[in-house]
Length: 431
Image 1 (tube, rainbow, N blue to C red):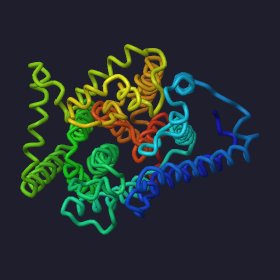
Image 2: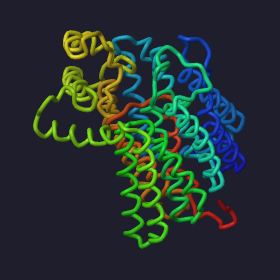
Image 3: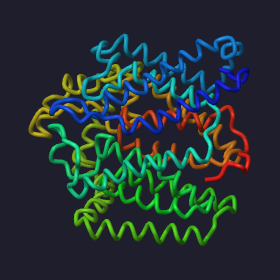
Image 4: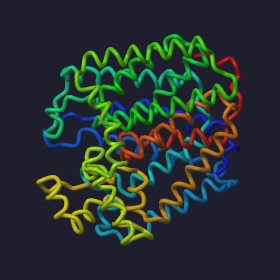
């Protein structure tokens, strides 16, 4: 789509995107012992914002729909959408595939909402550097709450699932998901300090990094670590590394690690378990227990894909498939009935839910966005940080799942990375 006929529409859409990014993390309703505090309320909130966007498109339809431009990014997004619809039609439980399970609420309606957020972010006027400050302020508030939880301080009542948790999960709903959220935000703070020399950003980075450690989420640690390594490689290759700033960054990172390690005796054990899992995989030893039993799920997930390769089992139907084909294995492994409703690997999960057609379309869609973004890496001051955030998310997604309290940020960042209005920032906008 090309919204260039009406300048104001770009700014209106950008405002809606900022509302989603800044408000959604705070949308949770801690009422009732068995209620959904975290997921359903967030989905309803940003679906409402998407509804406002669609009304704007209707109001400005002559300007917004006068010229439609379809590129390969949209073609593969459309193919992914077609795979989603077909997989829903042939799902084991079509109704659940549409509305989502009560526990996850990530059915077809939610995935379509993600897609609309992507379209909005791609065609909005590009966010400014001061908007990054606001996003980081939100991240700090979310992090402070998570840190308090790690010290067993929580001002809000908890539901029956989380009442005894000691790892930080804040308003995101789960330590793993908070880790994913922080992987997306950390590069914003890092780049603001390294390239824009804002000392306050180093303090923000330290807080976000400490909270990331407090989630005790190994996949998020790997995603953040590798994406930051790539960030510094890119800067070094383009001779943009400030050695002094880099040394301060490393010193603060080490300091945060030492502080958290000193306060949490289980941290080193958790950290070393990463290398132990790698060793077990190489030695083919105790595979079903690797990665907190992730490999148990992955191996059987691959067999399920082979049994239904084209269009999968349908969104939110993975748990149904596992119980139908592997209930005895599950009981034998966990000593009880556990429902693996997600594959704990986002790419395997896409293959399970939408088949290999959906997975290929999804990967091509993301690959084209990264290709586009890297061509324009220096055309906008925020482009590099957004690209590194996306790559960090993609890395941690190998060990984690898509969830409604985080995925919307990822899809918005995909839209920003392929934004149609990327251009060099005028220097009047300061952080």
